[in-house]
Length: 243
Image (tube, rainbow, N blue to C red; front, side, top):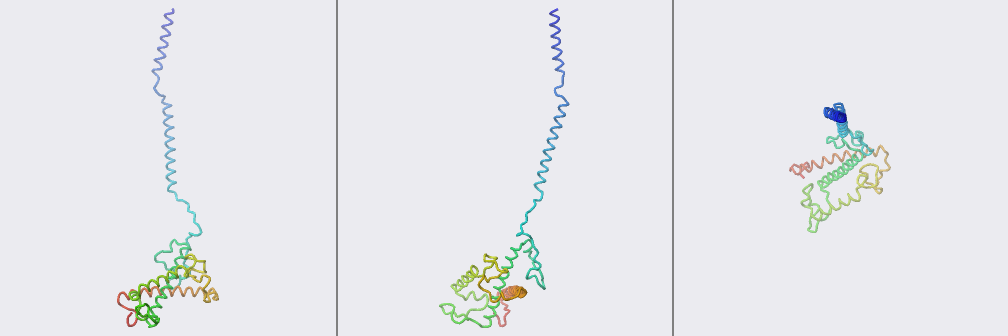
């Protein structure tokens, strides 16, 4: 009896082992759930990368300060007939008021220099010269020709004096709000609290008119002195009797 019970128990153990060996190596249900979980994770990763890429190319909202606001200058002084607002090079396309004032300051200064240059040619061509000599060698002011040719006759020390005088005016006298001086009424206001010549006695309409006249005369003088210089170099003088 004991031997039979031992044998039965051994048979049970063997059957149990055989039944376990016949079980599948992995559960198909568990494998499917694991694949689904991995797929969801991968989709989340791809979605996150797509959102990050889109955010990288999204337009960044710009904060525009009042100083950099693009303004229209069609009604500014100088935009007058027959050309009106004339900006063929597009220098004011993205300009703010500060940029416009700087360009206007440069335009006014160049116009004033050009007017002096044209007047200088007219004066010397008319025979009006300073008396005396320009150097110790005895070169007379009347010996200095008109135009570009004068540079070859003026001594080096005289050229240096001219450059030094212009530099002094530029650094200490001809200043307005565009290059560091106290703000004036408008770009090119070089009074600096000292010079006036009756400007404050004019009405606002008269001031605006005189500024417009100066601006137009300066523009014309820039074209005029350029034409005189070009024709002088070409050997075709615009003055009666030659340069």
